[in-house]
Length: 319
Image (cartoon, rainbow, N blue to C red; front, side, top):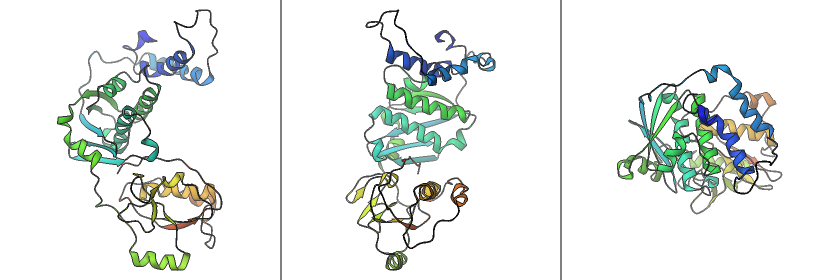
């Protein structure tokens, strides 16, 4: 396999699952060559790729293809930012992201930027510029053996870009030359924040009851003392809305447009609704809801009371 890395497209990437598993099970310094190992089914499944004739005979160019776009990325303790020419994107870290190693977050920032710019990157060779030589190595080498967390993050990034027919080439960019991306990772604009007018929410609270938690808000536009924020920081801010657990609490939700489908799925699967409201409708109403669309962050409203502790998955949404 190692001999094919320069002749077979993405061979190094497809070798990583076996390499990572073998490194976790066998050590030349500790184990003898007579040690017997049983290969897990997931690793065996990953080897199936090597049996496809068209992947082995696809070939690679003799020289590197010149990139068509430059994607500049940076991250901070607050969030991440990236730009391609005059286009830019940014986002705050979720609470779950803050515990990740700084290098893992740097690689995740690139992944999130690729997701945000996927329409423009499709079928192109992209030069990724960042002030992190470790990330440059893990992108160009399609993973690595020194850090399992970094390797898995790199594999996730490459699986996404391959699905979009995007090829990445990473280069180091000194921090002094990535001022714009650095600012995007630290300074967040609130010009697109949306919330219902206070008179409307006041009437809603009179009719439906006063909620304890605003599930999708910022410190500037919250309607409750406690609120859930993508940043997860600041006085009054609590957990991510999809990870929130409660019993008998009344919640207020005015979710961003990209999260409406996910909110509906949570309502459907966990039967979350106001005790005096009609049910959302037949299951197909939620199951057939359209996919999230891009747009201003806030765009829907509603109430929900939990009857038992709930948990859910969190996601990073580019802003």
